[in-house]
Amino acid sequence: MRLVLTVALVMVAAIAATAGTAFTQTTTTGPVCTFAAGKTTCVTTTTTKETTTETTNLPNETVVTNLPNETVVTNLPDEFVVTNLPNETVSTPTSGPCEVGNSGRLGTAEGISTQELAVTSTQAFNVTSAQELAVTSTQELAVTSTQTFEVTTVTVKTEIFKGNTTNPKNRESSVTSPPVVTKTPIGAPVVEKTPIGAPVVEKTPIGAPVVTKTPIGDPVVEKTPIGDPVFTATGKCKNVSGPQKRENQPVDVPQGKQSVTTLPEEVEL
Image 1 (tube, helix red, strand yellow):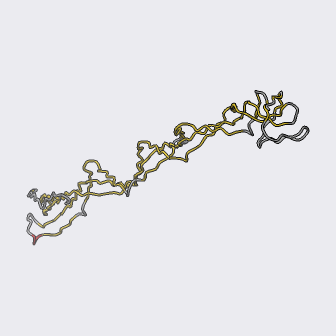
Image 2 (cartoon, rainbow, N blue to C red; image 1 turned 180 degrees about the vertical axis):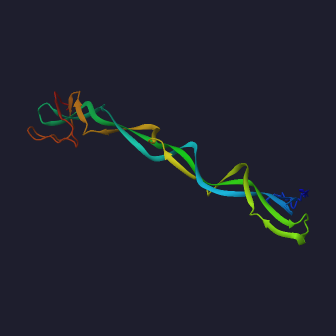
Image 3 (tube, rainbow, N blue to C red; image 1 turned 30 degrees about the horizontal axis):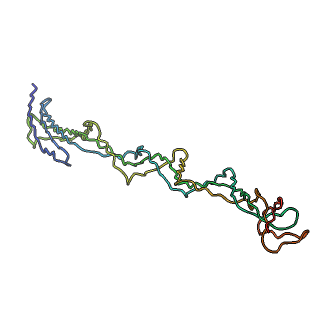
């Protein structure tokens, strides 16, 4: 005859679920006893479930962000551009020296003074250099992965009693098996990325700078005499009062490169 004695006991040892604290639940089933061959065998199973959180450091990441382009304008020294314009000739009515006939006497006559002028135009420019820049921001991130697990630990206690009894005095042996641990992930891991220091901003020139030259006011025109004016008599040569040079004596001509024109004599007494 075989007698089976079954006693089931379920115990909740501890339940804790607060922020930062692992959830723990312990359940004990048994003892479940069976009688055979003159001995009673009782098995008690203890199951503990708890949640744990594990954080793993993953390789750092670097995130590069393209920011809006920038344009940097630099003021360069002003420039002056000088342009050579066509020469000009200025004719002015005036009187100048002449020789009365071939007498060697100095006279004066109405005429034209002609002056050649070199003409230049000087323009001042405001000069700026505009450089477009590609801007990037590089941020290094520390990366962690946090995974929550349900850890189940099962231990089995086996007791053998002599006879059809569970009297401790009749216990022949009591053996507890090594715990069997099962670790099951709960949901997906939570990945967190934390900035390391400040981002590094880099600015890279795009192409060559654009130089702009803007005129400042109107150009300045300058006229510079080329050599001395040339006098050309157009009227009759008139005597000059006062002592005169005799014939074949040199005639004193006023300073400056002026031609002495020999015209028909007009004697004024």
